[in-house]
Length: 325
Image 1 (cartoon, rainbow, N blue to C red):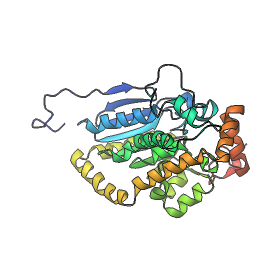
Image 2 (cartoon, rainbow, N blue to C red; image 1 turned 90 degrees about the horizontal axis):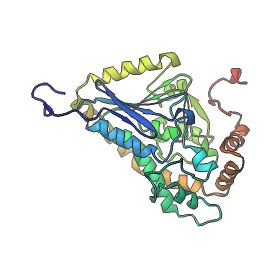
Image 3 (spheres, one colour; image 1 turned 90 degrees about the vertical axis):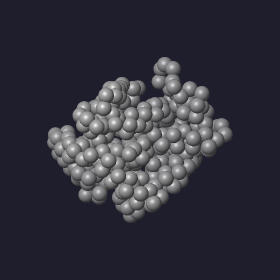
Image 4 (cartoon, rainbow, N blue to C red; image 1 turned 45 degrees about the vertical axis):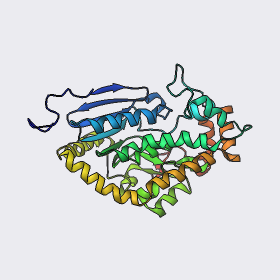
């Protein structure tokens, strides 16, 4: 922490381990490790996710031991997007137990009422909800320290909103990236696709809802590196260790300088506009139809019916389908 003349000499170390509803946090050496921890649900997003993610990133950003922050997912994938068993199938029904968001714009009951096809939609209550999700995910971009997303398995829909805010993405060759909800019931609220892969490639993906493999993501410049799945941990650790050897001051200044160019591209404006259109997309005729189908037959059937006409159910569009069953 800087030697004998450090400003932090003699001061107690910040708490190094936290377990939340949706993630865990720990510090090992100079690396803060945030891990999504809902493996049975594919690390799907709940109303707790943006709050806990932002708090964990802030904790790492304030910790003088930490040089770099890595975000990953426990289980079969990074993040499968919003938990449609909550947000679509069960009308925003909250998990059991008291919720810290009760009585706020993030209250699932409030949002269920605001998604009633026979009620009156309040667009600003919707925006207040989604902008908070977006703000929590964007903590990865706005943190002073470097952030790395390690993606295995899948980063789909809202999972890409999170991953694309990280400074660097490193992924498994067979990982899957995409935003299928652009076909029905969603627009990427983060608005980061064009900033990460350019206008033409972003439109290619979002006009179709198609997905990329991890290898294709690296070729397109979305990920800085892809690796065979069994080498992802090792390659990620190599990157983290190299970053962590650089003094914090240098890392912060480099990130702020580089982010100045990115922010001048209009990242904040893209996020605001995309968040508005995401809300609208859930309240169109087809958006309500998707929600009602999910509530009637289950979200898996609704998603399957949406995606099967494209011939890519559970497959990255740019992978060769020879092994598809």
